[in-house]
Image (cartoon, rainbow, N blue to C red; front, side, top):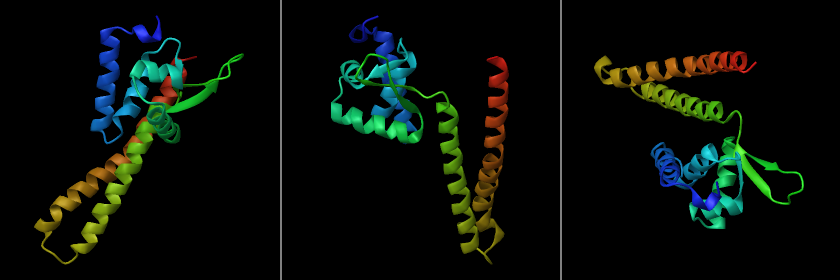
Length: 160
């Protein structure tokens, strides 16, 4: 299918992916790029193709592809006989994204521990919110990496 003739449903998916990404605190355009690359056939697109599909400026795409490269969600690929660079979803993208969430959870745990230190000597009812948050973040910080590890082991078995 021609890149500029994407169906309404495909365009809608790309926009919805952008909105979802934005709701999680990331730039909408970065989500639109990911959405585009997720359903692209072939699985890679050049900046020019992304610009045409997304009706976005080259500057915006340059900034957002750099952001996605730094997050480890996409990678730059070269194709034999072609001078342009192309982008595709990195094979470890989703574990990278969850890993970033683990980093954020760890930061939240540390902040709640700081809050508990500030509340030292205070009534235990006042500390309950912080303790509950710290306990949840500690639990998630321990369990997420284990889940990722189990998923990766199972995924590798399934792909053999």
